[in-house]
Image (cartoon, rainbow, N blue to C red; front, side, top):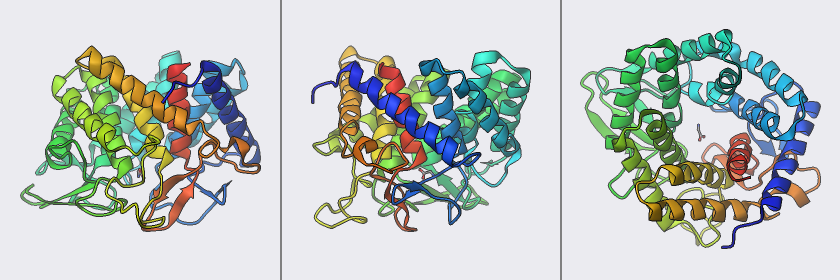
Length: 368
Ligand code: GLY
């Protein structure tokens, strides 16, 4: 697939900026999760409250790229709306919330108050660590490990550095090794969830909430793993984690469909209709594209680096098509169509999802 021109990437980013500006104007102080019929949905079920950082993350990205000073003021304002979440013990998602909001704020300014929030958020996340099984437990229960948590672990590493607290780093590394050993399979595919005996720490079985089955590979889960291990390698330089990310990438690249945008689960029966069969998840494509661009910089061999980079561009180029990019869909409020949040719960199915928009924007900023 040919690489789209930089002008196309720039135009897509400008479209995303217009959509987010309209979102902020039409839904002030609101953190959207998914659309319904293309309109950002208020109220209703969210399953868990994990997505606030993505809107702020896009504001920081536009602050970097657009030269419009309003984005910085908006980003700081929306950061403050998230500040209380630094002590939220109910979710495992503090990395999603704070790495895309307070971390960019701190990186720009070195602000001590932002630093304190990041350290507190890291400490709060670390309280989910289960000593027996050596993992950070998911929000559904103490016996449950989610592959998604790999995206939150970098917050522990950031907080460990900022606070000079080695115990946070040790929790992060232990969690990564348990995820590698229990959720990442030999072929690089991933399970969504692992269940443990809480008393002994014994691993019981793989399971899922958002994928097709315990044995299947939920596309977004694999993308989370690939990105999470890539980030952990970036922050630690530890080769054992680069190897996991590369194993994930191998599976990802070998199983992508022709148009390079994944179906929601790699084991979905494509002869069946959506939502259980042939349904895309553009958000998984956007996450993976952004991860592969980073992995391309880190890869052990120049050949792998080229493969990862080209694969990322092929997916990004596919997402530029108006089939996915809402540029030709009047009234659609999101950026990318054909994302999915939770198939079984019928939440955000074949809609825009805010993390799809965020990772698409992030990937674009890496290539323009
Ligand atoms: N809860 C993370 C996800 O839906 O991917």
